[in-house]
Image (cartoon, rainbow over all chains, first blue to last red; front, side, top):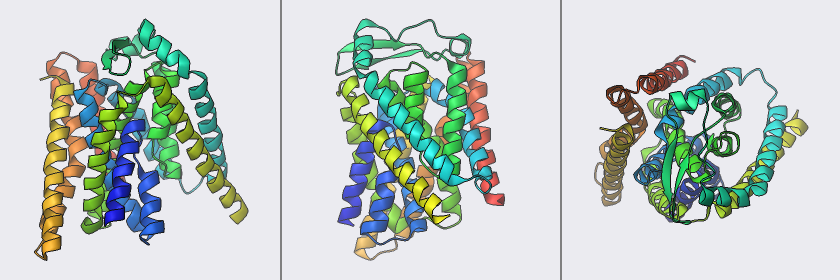
Length: 283
Length: 90
């Protein structure tokens, strides 16, 4: 119980800091250290992902970091992608997809490193405030937040909305096909392709994850796959961790956050590559 | 009420009440008393919170005069319901 609580606090903290679900920490802990079956671990983890999203997003909403309109706009195609992914699961060669995703994550990691200094410069110079495009202006997706690390009010206008919604579809598709959380893709999509500040991307991704994960979790729950005795300490742990993570995130310089996120992307890329290779060898 | 504020209130309320129920459940579990009712209610409440938050934005955006965003929210809610139904009948 103690180990479960500690790993859940850590998963919630990391999840809130980077806008991801945290399942990548919860599932291995439950299976490797607590000897749980993979089905029980996934069912427990998905409930934890919903909890970390709610805890993180509520804090970020209070700080004005989450952009609800942007989250809902991108979620339309992400959900559609996840549904298509789940339906295509049976027919697609997973090993190649894992390798493609590994390469994509590595590319995104390199981009995060390349732009980490530029992010801070743009925060200080108001460089995120642009003209926007027809969709972002029509839906009034622009917003602002107070950056606690740089002590400035950052105004921003998302751009390339069409590319963003297309990429979100593919993020959802990969999620549905390969069972990975969408946050690790959603954050760079907003930050690198749509010109949304890193911290807003993290806060918005956190809100989006809850929407996607709650649907999946409700299915697991209604089929009786969620064990309340396991889920309860995980939920309490991730709520504590996510609340703490969301309090810390805005105090970190956006550049450092990008570098740390790049390391996370490299780790995910490695995970995907090893999965892809093991499937190839197995086949 | 603004959509952001409403979402914040619903998420916070959902999180606090479900976490409280789960904590009560755990306490009852360690005391050897019937605990499942508290845990199950806590998890149910937790899992419906995001859908409640998204649904609440529909009237909120509509009243703010942001009809395109109300429509986007409606699509997300419909997709969530559709995804749930799809999973049940697979």
